[in-house]
Amino acid sequence: MSTVIGKPQVEIDAAIKEMVKHQEERFTIVHCRFYTEVPTGIRIWPSTFLNEDNGRKVKLIKAFNISMSPHWTHHFIFNDFIRFTLIFEGLSKACKTFNLHEEIEEPLAFYSRAISRNNTDVYTTEVFC
Image 1: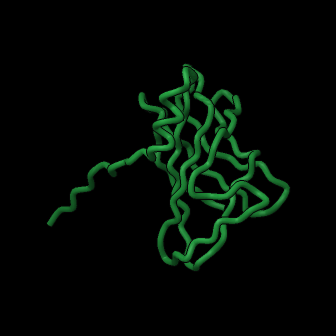
Image 2: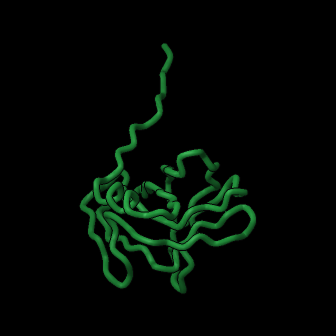
Image 3: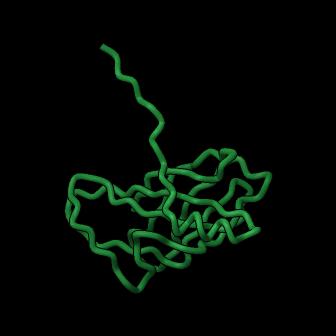
């Protein structure tokens, strides 16, 4: 018996589509998954950025389904993923890989493993603390 794993279907929120439609600038969309064993509150800090392989930091513009610090979003999910979407400025043309990094003065900052660049600049990644 074999298991076939397909590419996940990515749906882009209507608010994101509308925002991108009226902008000439490029954006990078990162759909994040954060695993939790217990219901929890999460938040993202404005100091979250994408760190390109050349060291350039790409600024966070907007967050969906997660509050910006100091506010919290409470999720009543356990043994599953909390999903949220982050919109960043566009990656530089030379970037081949990058990772997500939350730069804060507290423990449990979000981060991701290296993400390979694609031609759509829409990504799905798991984030950790």
